[in-house]
Length: 295
Length: 313
Image (cartoon, rainbow over all chains, first blue to last red; front, side, top):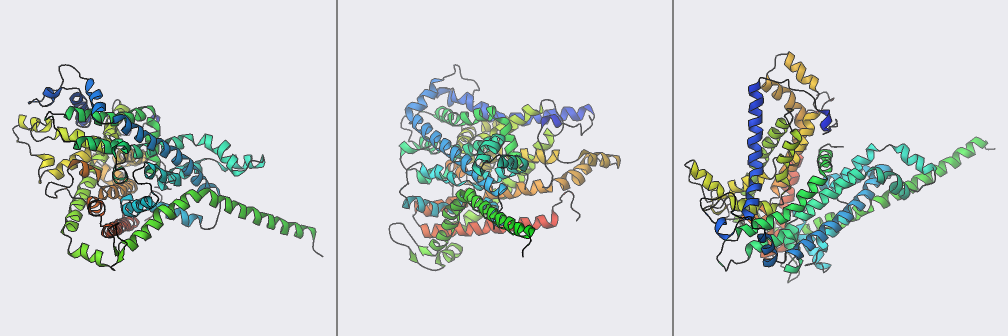
C-alpha cells in the first residue's frame, strides 16, 4: 500500500450525502442490531456470573439473578489457585513486554539508521518470518527448551521476546522512518554516540510506537494458550489460559452446576485486557493501522 | 609531487571508509538480538525439525533415521492427516470469507458518518479482545444444548436447536460462530476502515456525476482501490485460520467424532500425546510448505490482480 491512511476521527468527510431519511434509519437499525449481537454475549456472561446454582440452571433462562452474587468471584479463587494463575500470567506478560520493547527498539534502530552490507536482504528475511506460524516450530522449540532444562518454567513463554520479534521490529522501523534524520545529525555533531542518539533523541519521540508494541506484546502473552499448554505441566506454574481450562476439566463431584463460576473466571481473565484497551485505545488503533500499511 | 588537495581527498576517503565500517559494525550490533533470535529460534529449529522429520523419535530413545517414511506414512496411512487437512481447510475458507466480508461490512457501516461512530467502533471491537479460552467458555454456555440461551431463543421461534459443540454436524458451525464473533470487529475491520479512508472522495463524486449508483460505486471504486488492504487481510487471516488450535482444544478437543479435528491439533496430539516427535515434525513441515505455497500464490495473484494507486497497469 503506497498511500498512508490515518484514523484521525477529526478527518471525517461527508462522503455520502445524506440520502433519504429511510436509508439513514435503516443504517441505524443495522448498527444497533450488530451492537446487540456483538455485545449481547458479554452482558449475558456478566449476568450469568452473578447467578446462584439454581438460577444458572433455570429453564427458561432468566436474564437477571434475584440478587447479584459477587461471592461467586471469591468462590473461583477458592476452587482454583487463581492468584497463582494471575501472578504467573502477569509475570510472563510484563517480562515479555519489557524484553520486547527494548530488543525490538534496538533492532529497528539498527535496520532504519545504519548502512551495512546485506541489510536489505536481512530485512526481507525478517519480513518473511512474519508468515511463519509458530505452530510449525512447536516440536523443535519444545525440544530446545527441554534441552535447556526450562520445561515447566515460565521462561519459554517470555524469553523469546528478548530477540525482537519480527512484527514489532517492522512496526518500530516504520515509525523510525517518520522521524527526520536531521535530529540524529544534530545530536551527532554535538558529540553524541549512536546509543545516546537512540536513548536521548529518538526514544522520547517514538514512545507512541513503543506503547503500541507493549500493548500488542502484552495481549499476545496474556492470551497465549498453545505454548502454555506444552511448556507448563504443574498447577503452580499455570497461566490463566491453561488455568481456566484446568478449572473446566476438574471433575464436578458436587453435581451442582458451576457454569456461573466458569463465567466469572472467564471475566476475570478478560477484565485486565478491557481495562488496558480503555486506557490506551488510541495506541491500539494506531498500531493496527500501522501494521496494515506495508513499507 | 602529490598535490595537497589530492592528499586530503585520500585522507578523507580513508576516514570515510573507517566511518562506514564503524557504521556497519554498529548496525550489526543493533540488529544482533534479532539475528541471534532468528538463528537460534527460527532457522536452527526449522533445520533441526527437518532432520527430525526424517527420523523416528520418541524422546526416550535417540532418533533413528528412516528417510522419508514419515512423509509417506502421512500421505498414505494416516487417515487423520486427511481429516485434519479437510477440517482445517473448511474452517479457514469459511472464517476468512465470511469473516472478511463481515469486517468489510462493519467498516463500511462505520464509514457512513453515523452518529457516535467512535462508540459504535468500540462496541464492534470489544469482542475481539476477549481471550480465546474465555470466549469459548462464554459461548459454550450460550450454546449449551439443553439450557443454553441460544437454543431457548430458537425454541421461541419454533426451531428446535441443535447440540452445537456436542453434535458432529453442528460443532463446526458452533466454532464458526465463536471465531467470527471474536474477529469480525477486530483488527481486520480497523485495517479496512483505514483503507476506506485512504480512498480519495473525488473518485466517488466523479462516479456519482457519471451516474454510478451506490452498488456501482462500491464495485468499481471501493473494491478496486481496496484490493491491497483486502489482500493483506486475506494473507494474514488465512495464516491465522490455518493455525487454529485453542478454540478447538478448549471447545471440542477435536470432536465429536473428529468433526473439528484441526491440523495443529494433529501435530500436538502426535508430538505430545503420542510422543512421536519425528512424525509430528514431518506434519509441521508439510504444514509449513502449505503455508508457503498459499502465500506465494497470493503474492503472485497480487502482481496480477491488485490495483495500486499511482501504478499504471
